[in-house]
Image (cartoon, rainbow, N blue to C red; front, side, top):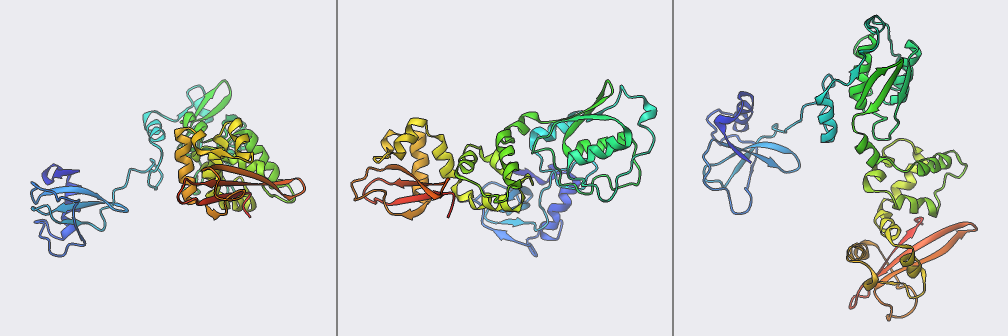
Length: 361
């Protein structure tokens, strides 16, 4: 992306001038010089400015002959932060748009004398990262009833300094900070404060199934805390965004989170296995296995990727007459605890087999 220097704002012009240390763009003292894309950049004047991406995004000055890019070490591009919060804005676009489009707090039905006074205080022990904790602190001080959603994606915020910029707050001030930090709307209707995410579609897409969350709650409270084969198979049914949300949710505790981290390398294999139809899974567990030719084109593509990246293994069964395909074997770790071995045999002439073991050894 290249624009003439004169079209840039004064602030950006100053940044570009700093690339080489002098407004006339003498290349002396430039901080970095890099070759342009293959084929060079032709037909550009010395006062053309571009954007360079190489690990970060920087402003760059392009030489007249297009052979050199002079890159600023301090020209990283940052998006505007959330209003009132000193942080880079890395929100999903649909959330960012929702936050900018309208007011997040609507107290029009609430008598003004009830929310104009500075009466709310928030102690140092309050966990400001959790929506439920913050709303409870407001409810205890005001007597209001809150009805709020509880999605994993928006129930937490990284802004641990929320509600620390002054000693006391009006209800309106406190709710506006809470709404922006947690990306929620707050509306007062008929005596109840309704708190709802600004992006229900996004939150729903990243929400793991409730049954799985209840299962992990039970595991966290159990004595062993060990995941079983069925738990790994349920993880395999999650989308990548659901799996990542579960990892960073803070719900699992160190023990379960450690087990899930060790299973990351198994996720592609688990997703592949759980995506098979019931008949295909039965075939894979039979002696003859599920032949690669009996898979759909999408399944064959996933199979080939897994066959190249798994741990080396001996071919299931005996001899080299095994057809290329998927071979799934079940075994007992101990009474009542199963282990699944997912083995993939590639086409001739390599005859290489790879395997994934669940739970990992």
